[in-house]
Length: 210
Image 1: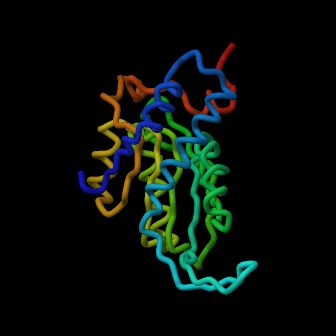
Image 2: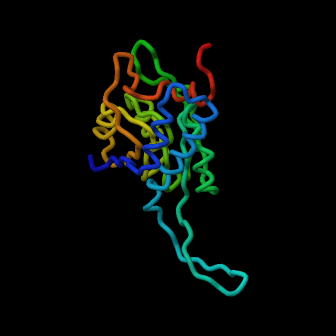
Image 3: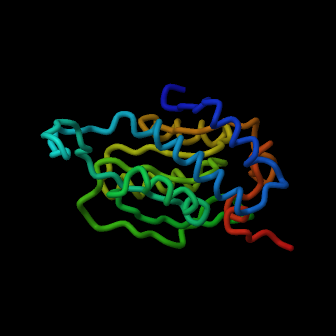
């Protein structure tokens, strides 16, 4: 699909394998999410617009380019929070707006429980952050909220994705770019990605059952 970019850099593949390992402890898991988020963001922001600017170095004037668009980061609670700080290191002036969904275990559809978007003045570019794109339900709901806000350019950054979720999002919003580190085999009957990496939120926040 033209709207999907798989980041196949050797560093991505190296860190992704460690991320999948069931023996990787939460502190290392968080670090790996940070590294992969930076690499995803690097690719997803290649087409940000710039404008000419000038600064004074210690020796003389120097011309260059600076970003000219407002960028919003939209993490999907809770796992998306693990991707925010490393991307803010690259885009320190980005705005951060939160959307929260939980999955109804009977219908497997998202239920919104939190939304923090302003009434107007949308950002120019929104980067939706979620380590896992499974069924696509939560991300579709996020896209609809951002379109209602008035955002015209949206990209999804996900570490891994299921083909079912990508197909669902691309079918409804073919204009939305999707950046992933890997597209896995499929969803199981409980809508978990296979081979996957477990529950990203639980592993980031060390919230797995004892």
